[in-house]
Image (spheres, one colour):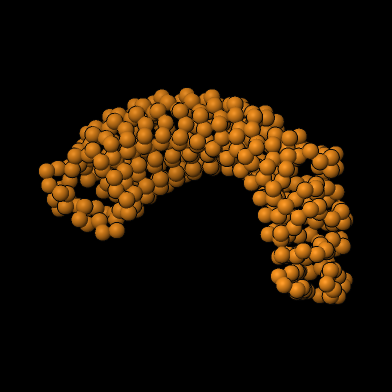
Length: 396
């Protein structure tokens, strides 16, 4: 290993494991660990001089939080064996190309401008890219033409937090058959959700939240058979929850809150996911009818149904959701009696909101709840002529 103020050179030695540290003045530091003949990892922190791009065997290069500005050195094109490149949280103004082995590219929080540079053209980029994070930048819809060159290789794609990304969502997303993770949340996307998303049968994580999407949730979402997490909250979606969502047998988390969804909640809501569903957010919509019978949802931990127009009584089957931690059905039009049967088996419950309903509590004086609440809201509920003795047991 040779030391210098502006350059760090590694001596070739395929037989040795090497752990090398090269400290420059002030906060300049390079650390490299690995076996040069197979895998070497370079970690750069506050390195303001030359980037050691003359390492043709390098496979993993981490340059996050390095305070780089200006252009990336052209020598990056010589890293033909590079598999993973992390440039997160640094400024980046020129394309990464001619890296035929690259599979992992992290450009999160890099102040990336809209894609107009010729060096980012699809013709020059032929890597088998599997992981791509472009979140928290300044990208626009011009990124799509480059993105859609990886329809059969890309597995993980994050395009969230690009405030200038607006317009409609291209149908071409439906051709990305290999995607398992897709996050395009917290942008300014408009229009409807394309039916073509139903072609993405490998997708397990899908987040379109916090945009300005309108229209209904397409029935084709029910074709996404591998889906585990679906986030469509904080949009302007309308209509009913499509019955096809009952086909999502692996669904664990569903967030549809803060939309304009309406209609009655079906009694067989998400029946196929009764063993897997953990989180259900349906609050701040316009749902009507009664609270569905969720008996059998053995994994449900969070249930948000507040701020709708639900009526009728609260089914006692709610008390059989033994893993329930958060129950919020406040600000509806529920009536009837809340008995010990509604709460008897909820030993994990820590948040309960039944406020702004017309519910009457009927508990025996000796009843001791199985839970300890951190938060309790019972505004407008009738608790009896005397202060409920069971509330004295809540010391949390």
